[in-house]
Amino acid sequence: MNHLDYRKQKGSSAAVRKKQQYLLVSVVFSFFLGIGLLMGAIYGSRSHARHLAELYLSDVTWEFGQGIKTTDSLVEILKDSDRKSDSFYTGARSLQLQNPVVEMFAFELPAGQRLISPAGHYVASPDVYQKDVPVSVMSGHRNAADTLFFGPFPISDADTGIYIRKSVHAGTGKYVGTVTTVLSMNKLLRTETISELARQGYDYRLLQVVGGNARIITTNLNKPLSYPLSVTENYEGQRWELQVTPHNGWLTPEIMLLGVTVMTMGGIVLYTAYEWVKLRAQNEELNMETRLLRKESAIDPLTQIYNRRGFEIEANNLLQSQDKAILAFLDINDYKVYNDIYGHEAGDRALVSLARELTALMKKMHGLTGRIGGDEFVMLVPGNSQKHIELLSKWADKKHFFMQKGTSFEYSVSVGYAFYPEHAVGLMDLIHKADKAAYHIKRVKGINSFCYNSVLEQEHRLNMGFSVKDLEYGMPAALVICEANYQGRILFANREAEQLYGYENDSSPWMGKRWADMIAPEELPRILTEIKGYRNRHGAKDMNGNYPGPRKPISFHLIKADGSRIRVSTLGRIVYNQHYGDIMFILMFE
Image (cartoon, rainbow, N blue to C red; front, top):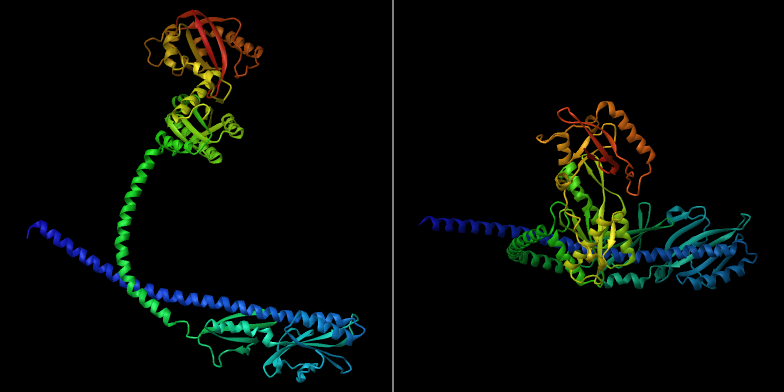
């Protein structure tokens, strides 16, 4: 036997053992499944029985309550009546028509006279006329000083009755008699309804419970029920209990057969299902990996919104289902400055913050957003109502912030937008035209959002693309930018300024330098006074927060790197910058 055959045989033996284990697990599981099914079937049967018992018992207690209310109504009629006899018969007839459960009314006057309604109807029970009913024959009480209940006692060969007895007192408190209402048990219990339990396969027993004693009111079986299900209900001191159990017990032959069948078939089905589920799991795992790869290819890893590819797919799908839409193109103003001054981590924070804002905005407008490169984002909003435009404009005009190492930084955005299908029908054309509108904002200044129009096609991006290095080497005059305060820390100086100062061979000539240090000491107070006076005289800023430029140059002696002096003339302007505050632009001529 070669090595390959040995590996096959070993693998085959392992597979057989694994299948044996699965088979054993299937048998055990099927057994417990069958037991569980039996328990579930019993539980379901008991739940159904409980529902029926609660329904029928509720009917009984409701009818009993109606009998009490009928008694109270007759007491109210007799309480202040001058002609007790007439009032009794009239009221009794009316109330009996309203409540057919009432078998009869009786009214005992203080003199011993007894009135019965219906006339001529008499129930030979001395308890009806007892003033003090012993507790031993009472079934319960609502109020011992007011109403008494007792029974059931026979009222005919085929019926029994519940007796409700209540004293009648006039408005002055004088005792004027006692009313007794007899309720027919056959009618009260709705025998034809209760018997429905028997027709549905249940034995039943209705009990009246007082304290620890239970009195059987009615039953269809003259022996104790086996494992009965009981439901109870209390009404005005009366506790009723209805017990039910199936004729054949809770574990019927049908349920047993079902359990055995499930145990037998369960193992076979379970093992077959296991193989199928295993295949499905492998398939699902493969599909999940495929979906994950697709998602990763459509989501920007930094901002967790759609990248260009993902946005194009979703946007094209959305456009196919819309008659109108708005596509907005936006970017962060001076984004490169944040990277240069605060580092790329701050730039990333700004992008993540903006992506979160856009996600929240698009959730409100039922649109979608994506990052298509650098600091460039796009939004697609279904519909193009004025409300949509106002929301976009309001959002563009508000202040935006991001946090970096516990410090809040403000930034602004430029939002250009175009309408579908008025301005373009293709997604790429829409993005191009929205980009045109965003570029127009950077040229105009003072606005944060703008809608595309055909005039923008005449604009060319000739004034864009210049860098700081172009200013550093291409400007034909010395330019120095410094903080507009007493320190005057130099932030930038171009090539001409370096030559003027004599720093041509220094790789970082301006590190730590102050503009005030370049001025002859004896002239510095005069220069600072002139700048201060100039600021006071021209303190009003323009619409961009800048001071007007000076009307005439300021001259002084400049101290060069080698200590020599040259006389220079300068023109300056103070400008507000969101990163440094007020800064001075200074042009110097020798």
